[in-house]
View 1 (cartoon, helix red, strand yellow):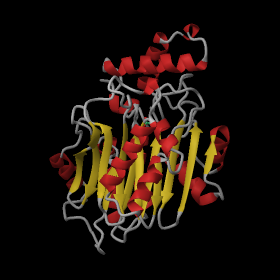
View 2 (cartoon, helix red, strand yellow):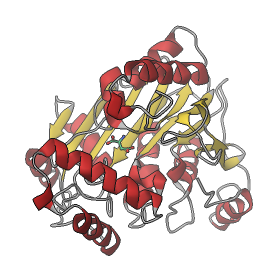
View 3 (cartoon, helix red, strand yellow):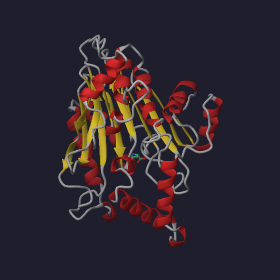
View 4 (cartoon, helix red, strand yellow):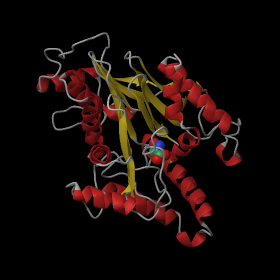
Length: 367
Ligand code: ASP
């Protein structure tokens, strides 16, 4: 995963807006504040030059609510037309429609909200937050979620495709002539195969085929929150919902324990409720890294279907976790880090950095 922002560039950006120039205003009460996110949490930048993790860290150290800070961070990525895995410009489903999923969880409030199959709103994380704040419910989906968003004052757009996501969709469509599929299962398999081909040819950034951003943070008071937002699997069957909006799968936060969130094959997390499992493992005393590895081992042992196994008999997909506990300890783990380049984004009092994801298995998913 390429590092789009090195330390020197970050410090320059921070200095430009006076963020880290005089040092962050960290009030420690035993917990060192930290923000962790998927690798794209250190790529897209706002007009002040801040990435997702830098923005969220600045806000939590200035006293903002931790969830508001995480959401403000991921909004930068949701609004970036160049990130084809999240929000505006996210790759569309098999019918060319961008359908977005997102979730939020607030540790201190012991509350959460999520939205799935949402069309026309660039920032689904903010809609998930509204569902948490304004309703008695946790999850709204599809057209009714859009109607709710309209009522809440969100702008509804006809189409969230950008020229880039539309071009990639048309290329995929050309290669998967719909007359050649017999049923939705064959179509999904052909679609997946062609999409992998496009990744191998460098048309789609591998990190953005299974994309998404998850961002979790803890402040100096030990308050923990998190959010996950995505356009989901590229070219998915219309109506497919992944793990990102399902609490316990793509995100889980317990204010007394910690937070975990994921990117990668959502179906694996839906079948194991991996984020919930990670938080529960931390509750039993595991370090974030060990808890993440335990979830990866569970997925490995649960994956027995031949079409999901590579030649070594191991999962032929990747999945990643971003984890933080109430003590401010954190980890980023992955099933495979084949080229050793995949990283996750971290920001603490030293500024933002890209940290290598630790892998459970050697080799790569497709060997
Ligand atoms: N986990 C997300 C999903 O399955 C997307 C991804 O990270 O690929 O929808």
